[in-house]
Length: 145
Image 1 (cartoon, rainbow, N blue to C red):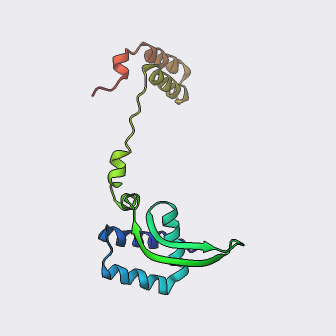
Image 2: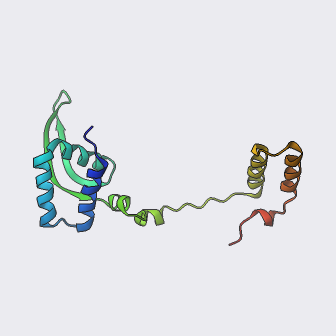
Image 3: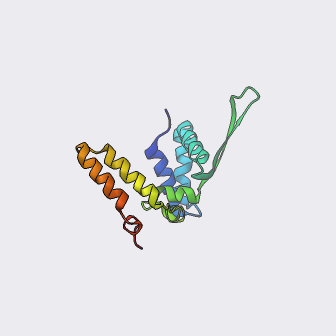
C-alpha cells in the first residue's frame, strides 16, 4: 500500500509551518516529491484531501471506463482541520468541540447499581451497597461546580 502515515505527517507539517502560504523551500520540496515519488505522493495527498485535511493538491480525472485518465497537480493547501489534526493539543477543534453531558440522579443510581452487581463481592455485601445507593441523597450524587 502506498499510504504512509509518516509521509502524510511530513506533508501536513510542511504546509502548517508556512500556513496560509507556501514558501519557496517547501515548493521545491513538493515539486521534488512529485517528480521522485509521483504515485505515492498523489495517493497520500488525495487521501488527505478526502479526509478534509488538505484543500487542494491533486485532481484525478477518470475516463468513461473509470480508469484514471489524467492527474492534475497544484501545490497543496492545508485546512484548519489539517492543522488541528497535527497540533499536539488538538488545536481549536479540541476547544470548540467540547460537549457537556448531564446525568440525572436516577441515571447515576442505575449506573452505581450496575457497578455493584458486576463487582466481585459476596451477594450479602452487594445487597448492602444497593441499599446505600438507594438511600443516597440527590445532592450526594451530583458534582459540585
